[in-house]
Length: 118
Image (cartoon, rainbow, N blue to C red; front, side, top):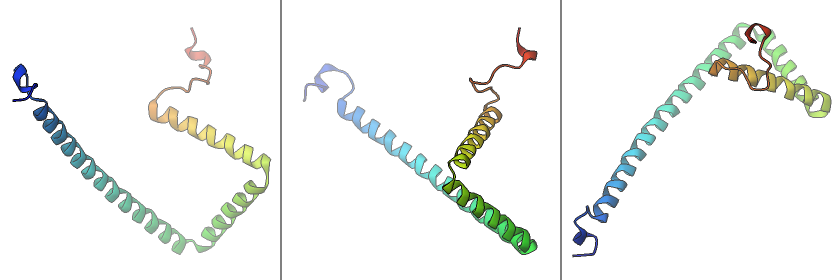
């Protein structure tokens, strides 16, 4: 008999075993969720790819124009500090809008509209 069994309390060995079993169960749940998410991402990616292909097939000139425009803007952003700053500002603006939309709350740095002030 060891010192932990003689106290009358549940054995440390049993506690460790149950802790390990819980860890294994949690790991299995996480593996299942990761597998589900992976499947959803693959399906979503293939759906987006198919939609893009059908758009390009239906509107080839528009697709070339869009690709040229995106490439031109990307090239200009690489070479122009002013456009980099503008892009950064635009991304911050869009990000704040997404936060507002998803949480239903205002971003802290935005002033409260006059209609809501007391």
